[in-house]
Image (cartoon, rainbow over all chains, first blue to last red):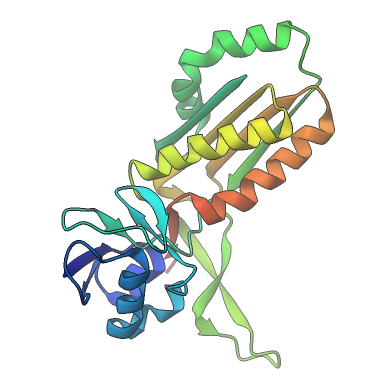
Length: 87
Length: 155
């Protein structure tokens, strides 16, 4: 399954893009947050500094934090929300 | 309990804060007149001139990160998650510390050196709750609210 991940801040600067695309093994019914994080580690080495470990990390899915076994559906909005620096 | 959180475009000038809080002024006055508030604490985050430039390493003996002069910071928010996250965090901190009120405001977009980009105002029966709440809020803001800042360097 192809997943588009929105990027912000330092991650967007490092990738020179505001979107990272990953190909994740499996069909739309069994792709999880953990799978997408692992695919980002493998397919986008420039983002490694901003990526949490797949086992314990989180992504924003449809504007809410989600971890681990949370399933990603094809039409979900997925974003990498790490290393925030407001304030 | 009064819980208010906003993302505001540009610097948090006195006028911008007044506009954002206009609808809540009556509730704030009622809270303070009610006698339950014994302490208020206001924190302002201000854009300072010198910032570490992580793309530059100083030539000194320590080889640390050099500081450069800023023109401004550009704040990027992931909307609407950022404002919702600010409100959720405000509600959680208010409940945890027994606050009577909490107001959190953060800038989106460009904020110049010397201008305010973040305001947190809390009220509680005693000073200890206000001090703990401000520290707690700011620590968690940097973990849980999707707001990023980018340096705009001078020169």
